[in-house]
Image (cartoon, rainbow, N blue to C red; front, side):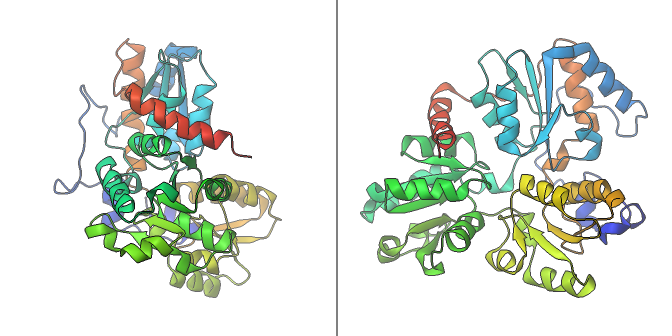
Length: 394
């Protein structure tokens, strides 16, 4: 990507950005997963035609899901676009599709497998497409945390609430311990439900969404919240702190939304008079407090759809989506810019590119199921229980 291609976003590509886009490599840090076959070259001029042909060969047997943060080259082949939970539900609503190709990240494909039937196969085009936030809470760490809460004498009063952006193991832990899942759209309803069941909430794995919902939306004090650090003894907290807290926030965050700062908000207001700042609730609390509006990816899209012509917006979320919205609403006279001056792609989302999609679709069309995501039955049962509790929220 060059600045000339996206002048409206005022962003500068950096060596790190090129790495995240897959245009450079760092063998010390990337945990790439090689495809068991020949991956097409990204310079192949026939990639679009090959993807289209493979999808046509598969017909109704395949259903392609595309998360909002995916590259444009991939999103053009999606049958449905949306956030992680919307896409998982869309997959469940297509029982006739033998293959669900999920253009997103690993935890999303797991959720789709949990919610679809046993005879449907969920495929992730690149197994290295994970989520740094989801990886910040492992099953072993959360089990140890529960032991700490038990020793402090508070576990029986704690209800776990886990963000959709978590592994199947964490969703299953939540189901086993009487908790529910939430999305960025219904986090407040989930917390209100949880506080009807118990006195405290263990919120996993994104501390910012938990804090913003509790303090901004529900009127709690910042002092009601403590942060549990899985890398420190007892989470870095005293027994008294655990007993006094209402919200026990896991020390996790989104690597994309966590980079936005208060300086980013101040800078864009100085550069663009009259701009409205709209950010995702995964952003830091001080950024959310300084914004004009806060909402999920679906909320952001709907807010821009309803915005008047001539309005100016600075959006604090992943750059692929912001760039797509900028191009979409430019003809309507709406100015949409990225909140930060530097590139902020989701590195793991960007691992799903056109060569991986072509490889996956052509393999399926040839009768070879590749990169299937399967959740074991016990984990699936408890994770589904937690998801069903969310679906039952008023």
